[in-house]
Length: 555
Ligand SMILES: Nc1ncnc2c1ncn2[C@@H]1O[C@H](COP(=O)(O)OP(=O)(O)OP(=O)(O)O)[C@@H](O)[C@H]1O
Image (cartoon, rainbow, N blue to C red; front, side, top):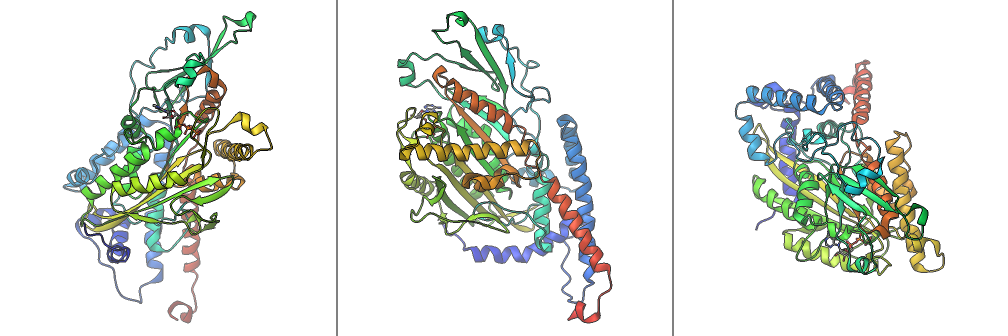
């Protein structure tokens, strides 16, 4: 299949970008009459800025409205429906184009989000509930509500995104980049990390050791955890303590890989195809099923493989000229060192630039098909550091990050050709190992300590984000530096917490669920960046209003 080079793609992008930018600034007019850019070099320098200010004011107002309605999803849903209706009447053929472009409906996300009171902290529940696990359904039905997915298939045409290898910082840039920034900011308003839980089946070893099942999943979202009293504790032998958690969705031990992918990641892939960044990370104790969920097996491929398959299939369907570029990079963080899994060599150095955190020298492979990606993933996994541990024969001792950058061209609602660039990060975290952390002498203990250190750093960042602190300690570990974009940046993020059903792993499971529950409260919102952008532009406009000497304007 013919595949164009990057330079060809950027050529078209430049050609069309001026038109796109202008169309965005004047949404009503643009639909019938795409404006041609005035080539005159003696254009009033204040003119463009005023337009941008106008557009920003509109966005700012929209942002304010959507952030206030975020607390009330039903209100928001109605509002978006109304806006869609509006758009339908304003732009003939809007719906048809939209349908053609997005297989997803504009608004709906099928995962039910917890309501405000369900969303509250974990509850310690009584014996009666735990014994029979007779959990009354919350209102009887799983209600489909809306969170950040409101922005998917947005009403505004997408444009090119500037991406880095890892990360994607936002700043005030030139006019062309302005539209991308505001759009991304707008799309991420009030986004919160979606949190899913996946229970794995009881392992043979656990069964042989006589473990009991301490986890129960009810209603596809409620997780009940039982703490059995020790058999030697005669006084409390009959006492059971339980905890109840609610997540965006919870998967039982028999949920197929495809279902996990469809509920957790398919929407992120859709977002990536629309030019938004997305991240999925698996979190949990060692042997809890993270690698199985992310990578899977040859017969049961996991999220990484299914996402790439989906991405390729959809890009081919939608690309207006059949050309697309998919770049892959795969790295691991092992003992606080960043290593390239596709081309192993010296540890890589992390650098922070305008695009965010980048791993200098990381190989970017251009992939042409799913099969090729599979081969690259297998090659990368062979290079990944694994060791047998107490809980897992092939335990991953490193955090692995697969990053896929997809770029293709599509026609927007005004039939302009736009370049879309989106980045998907798929992260398989190393599991924590309690026993190893206490033994200070062996290499394994160093690994364990480092894994725990980065997971501790991750939990500190989660805490700081939840508490709305100004300083988020990303710099405490390589892992958190690399996840900066996923946790607090302009990114749709999904967390899958993996747990074991065995009561032997009760402590680890409780810990995982606690952090997963906490992560629900993180919002990767960018209201603040729009705010900063708005006032920076205001400053720029004010500065430009001050008369300048003639030679400074034209010379
Ligand atoms: N949903 C599942 N269905 C069937 N088998 C599973 C499932 N989840 C995990 N397993 C099996 O459990 C074992 C441990 O899983 P896995 O290697 O994915 O754990 P992990 O969390 O990645 O551990 P570590 O952090 O030590 O690498 C594997 O043999 C895997 O095949």
